[in-house]
Image 1 (spheres, rainbow, N blue to C red):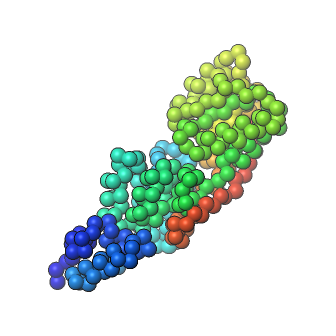
Image 2: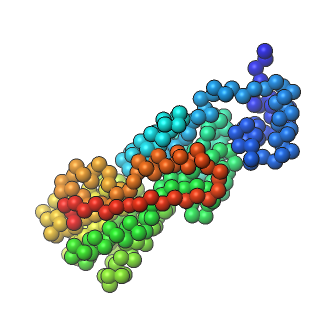
Length: 321
């Protein structure tokens, strides 16, 4: 028997291969007339979908970077849920932009993936393109304007709580080490930080609001060192990542300052780093494993209706506050 592929079906039905893929995998996204044309082409060519195709159970996880240990537990959670449901994960670091989107959707159409989990925020335009080709769930970072499902935390409330912990420990000159404002977490955590200062009638010093180009120990360490070496230095740091908190601890040691007596520090995420560094780092626990696990569950149940879920965070008080 002659082997028939989706491209031959597309030519017969006078549609694109992507349309054939949507009829086979996401029929609800295609008009009745188009689906009928594809069905007729399939019947006339005696085309049969290989039900044993592993790619029908393939989920792509789009990760901004693998050097950030924050993503490790998220991926572990996704793997756990995928294994339980007999799915496979493919980790992808493609930067999805206006320039790369066409190649990327061709890639996922060819693989006939079940869906994609995004760990970075995309513009509405690009999300709409992706959702026409496969299921999409946003994890941690999400586009508030999008109706696509998302799993995340309340970054604003968590950052406010972290800052209030520093204030309650007697600190009144508080700096923030932040990531790029292009990320939702960065903007929301800064907003929570500023709200806590305002409610407690503390002065805000713009020179102590540090937006870093990346969550990097090597970038943060010299910046914090310079701040601590100044005449008017902070006496506390709210760090939007445990990695940045570790940089503060190291820089504080350099100037023989005591933690938490001279400098208090609180991080974010409760990664393994916060537990093994000395002194141990106070932090906000983000349920990373659960976020990754739930992202897969949302993907499997996704009907592309807006479904934003927020998991609870927790303040973990250790030696740095």
